[in-house]
Length: 220
Ligand code: CDP
Image (tube, rainbow, N blue to C red):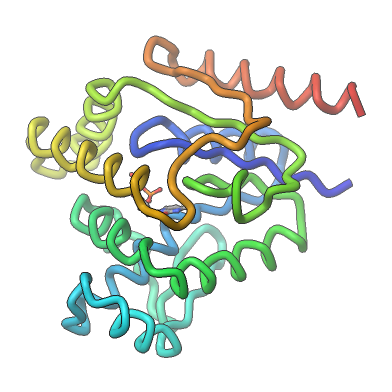
C-alpha cells in the first residue's frame, strides 16, 4: 500500500527533523520540498535575477534541472545540498515561492516522486495543494521564539556563526511572507492534525506522530 504523509508548518517547527525520523522508522522515502525552493532561489541569485521580478524568474526556470539522489540535491548535475542550507537561501526561497510557475514546477516533481513510492514530504502546502489526498496530514507549530532558538542551535551545532536576534527577525519575515502570499499560503489543511511542539522534545513528537499513523491505519 502506498502511504503519503504530509508534514506542513512554519520555519523551525520541526518539520524536516520529524519527517526524516518518521521516514527512517517506517523505511519509506523522504522529500524536502523546501530544498527545491531553495535551489531555485539559489540559482536565480547566482544568475543575478532580481527576486522581485517574477517574469525573469519564470523565464529562467527551463534552465533549471533538479535531481535528488540518496538524499543529496543536484542543480544541473552539480551537488548543492550544503550551499542551500544557510539563512539567506531560506529568504531567497521565500521570494521565488511567490511565483506560480515556480510552484507548478516543484509540485510536479513532488507529485511524480511521491507516486512512485511511499513518502513523507515536508513543506508549507503539501496537505493543502501538492497532495490534497495524502493519507496522513500533520501540521506542526511552535512559538516563534522557540522556533528561532531551534534554528539558532541547529546552525551553531554546524559551526556556523549566528545571531539569535537576526534569526528571529528572519523567521518573522518568512512567516509573514509565507502566510500572506495569495498563492498556496501557509495554513493547515482542514483535516490536518495539529501538534504544538513548543514544549515537546523530538521523542515526544515522534511518539505522537507514530500514534496518529497507527490510529489511521487501524481505522482503514
Ligand atoms: O526549513 P525551513 O522551514 O526554514 O525552510 P524550508 O522548508 O526549506 O522552506 C524555505 C522557504 O520555501 C519557505 O519559507 C517557503 O517560502 C518556501 N516553501 C514553500 O513555499 N512551500 C513549500 N512546500 C516549502 C517551502
